[in-house]
Structures are given as structure tokens and as C-alpha cells.
Image (cartoon, helix red, strand yellow):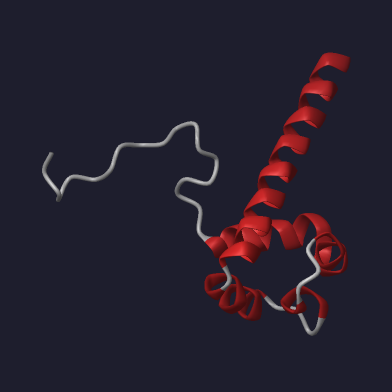
Length: 90
């Protein structure tokens, strides 16, 4: 395989193509900083939270990034379940 060719698409990976910034912004919009800090108690969410400080911390801390990505996936699944329930009720 030619190294200059792009890697194969990952159609079943919901994180593929998303930036960490997009994930943090989506979580903040959905949960807000206070609930986000309750769910993942790290200083970047509990003390003077901002997208910038969160990105700086999460890029340096793999375990925290995994928790954020996991919460994002949970949020997506919850939204999909709610949508299916709403569609079934119509």
C-alpha cells in the first residue's frame, strides 16, 4: 500500500474525524460545566473551566481523554435511544 494514500475510512467509529475540541464543546453544550465536572471530576472542569484549559489538560492526560471520549459515546447512545423511543411513539 502506498504510504501517501489516506487510511481506510472508519464508518462504524463515531469518533472518526472528530476533533477533541468538537467533543469537549458538544459535552459542554449538552451537560454544562457543572454536570461535566460531576461526571468527570478533573480540575479543568471544576475550577474556572474553559475549552482551552480542558484541551490543554486532555491532550497531556490519556486517561482523562479516554473518560471524555467515553462520556461522549454514552451521550450519543443516549440521544439515539431517545430518538428511537420518540420515533416509536409517533
